[in-house]
Image (cartoon, rainbow, N blue to C red; front, side, top):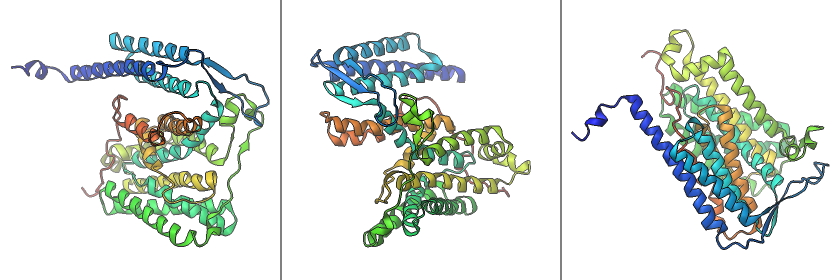
Length: 428
């Protein structure tokens, strides 16, 4: 008898209750963050301290920009108060569909409170930190786009970590051996594309479980790159020393204060990432090819009935996914450090998948998540420089903690393509 009220509820009633519960959880989290800001950051702080954030980028922007100087204690109190008011409103009335956006704003204010606390009595370059955030996000953007391309066609591709690792190693070896960085990039893309083809053959033709196939490739990539690195690259260091793609400052735009150095003075990988982002958004959602690809990932039987070759579409999507992952891996060696280090991807392929899920399998949604992860990585670097009283191990966990929060937090329901991960038998 006690379960009768619930059994009489309609599906819409249950959805409403679940959403209301989530909204209340969001409000509670916002209030909790406000309390933590006061307890952890403001309590015991000298009210006379100020936090200085430099906004200039020497050598890039000619315009003089005054530093942003904030009273540390008062600023934290103000941000915490705003966070509290937003949390109370969320609990009482709710921001509805804008709740996720307000939660993001709340998290941003909490992070800024943390930065103010870490910078109290010191100075840091805010423009440089934002620029580092964008740079850290580049391989994540490629990883997320790689996942979107494959999974929109119905093939789960958790092999992105391995694809990036292989492309990073092949790219630097070919570039170092030939002295031609462009050949290195091409070799990286070919290697990643061929490895992705292996994943396609296993999962599409032989119908191997797609998770297992992806993990096999990740394990293989870890083993083969570690072996080559230890066996050959240590003895032949000339094969592990490549030139880097230089930064290219776009005239006029690169001189825009703050934004110029961040977005318009980067290397080719940055511009390619955003070009691919726009291109994929257009191709997937505005062209017949994209419609057919998404149909294969949603309703492969219906697509087959309409004469669409489901297997061919999936093969093409997985290979393109591999090439996109190859750009991310090549960036690590040819665009960032110029050499290959063992396990240098450091989980970026998996974080790219998390960004894909957070972005609901849409390019621009994945971009936002990639920037969040990139910011968490740059925060780790900056706080280490400021010598904040936080163990380095905790700071090193920041990007991965952000990943966990994004995946299991209160971001709401996301929906994968209906046939994602399901092998298709045309004779079935």
